Length: 100
Image (cartoon, rainbow, N blue to C red; front, side, top):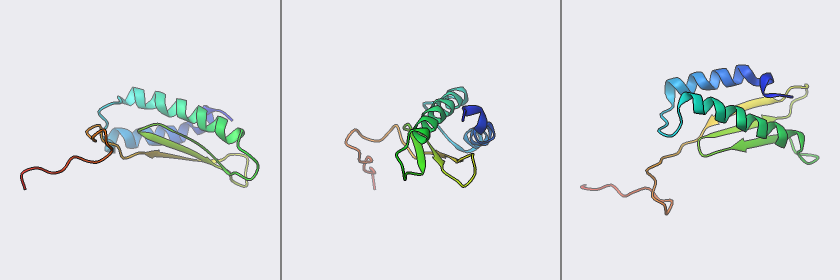
């Protein structure tokens, strides 16, 4: 199993990233590099999972990739863009609205 197996999923995720995702920290090229790196990690987690487990997961602050076992040879690949704000306070709470 390689990253190349999932090029269609990467292509679709990058289309969605370019069209719908606002990310101040990653250019589309950096997003592609992150997708490929995370997919390699998810493949490794999937291949090394303990008996009885069905998923391999890899994530960073912006992207989550889940490989899920199926009845066939090729697992399902889910790519999710995480809700994240660089403006979130360090305490983990959103800033209170002002002036109302």
